Each structure stands twice: as structure tokens, then as C-alpha cells.
Image (cartoon, one colour):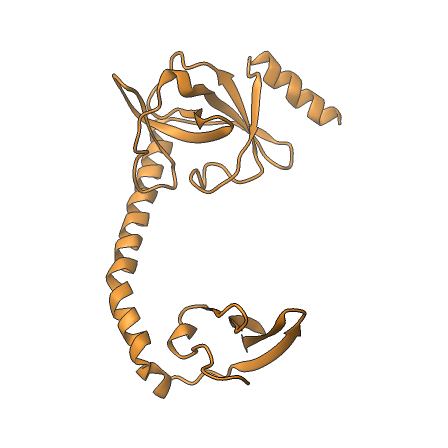
Length: 208
């Protein structure tokens, strides 16, 4: 309790009067769900690299980093997003600038917007973009291989097929090395399977 009180007093002295709980993934790894973000109200002295809390619609708060500033407002982008937000943020939508983040263990640290951090974010985005392009390039041939099912002639993992009765009917679980890799629910016609096992496991075509 004493530690929490000290944090509140320190943040109050800094003039950070608003607090938000971060949820989502668009600002990872800068923020993680459950962290507290302390905000300085207003939009004075905001520069590219700062992180703003803004409100696109009533009750929906977004925390994104300022990429640039133009006549229409602030151009923003999530640190974990590959593209910038489609619309600029007008000053009237800004709640404030995030300056302090509080960890779950009650430790606090300042939110940095220095050149090194921004460079690391750009590098990470470039890696994400390359990875996305690689996945996109392999998506079509992967789908073709799966549709033709010829991999199942050569790869035969030892998968345990187990039937479970539920109050709504039965479901089938496919287990490999004590891990569930696929589920088939005939009542809902729902089938899900982890890659690459979806190359050799398919929903049943008849009742067990």
C-alpha cells in the first residue's frame, strides 16, 4: 500500500491526471495488456514519436504513436501495426500524451520517444513486413498442397483420435504428444487444426 501511495504522489507531482488500462496488441511490445498508462492532458508540445491517447468515438480510447503532424492533425500508427492509421487525429480527439507506464509489479518508467527507440520500432516493423510477405507468398501453394492431400501419403504422425461426449453432443480431439492439435465438432460443423498438421488431418466425412 505504501509503495502504491508513493507512485500516486510521484505521478501527481508530474501533473499526470488521467490513467488508462491498456488492452489490445497494436502497441506491443511497447505496452502490454493490463499496464496502466498515465497521461498528461492536452496536445501542447506534441512531437513525432510521442504516444497519444485519443478517442475516435465516445468511450473508445486508442493509444498510438505520432508518426507526423500535418494541417489536419496528428498522423498516428501503432508500434505493432504495419500501416499508419487511415485518418489523422484532430486536436479535439486527443485526450493527452502518455508519459508514464506502470507495470503489474507496481514499477513505473517513463515512456521514451528518443531516436534509438524509434529506430528499433522501424526495424521491428520492417521485420514484420518481411514476415508477412513470406507468409503471403506461401499461402497459395500451402493451400494447394493441403487441398491435394498428397503429404498424408508420406507424413503419418502418431495422432490419438479421442471422442468426448458433451451436453450438446460429441466432439473429437486429435492429440499429438499430449497436445491437442485439432478439434472437430460435428454439431456446429466446426473444424480447427494447427499448422502443419492441417496437411494430414481433415474433418471426418462420416459419424464415428
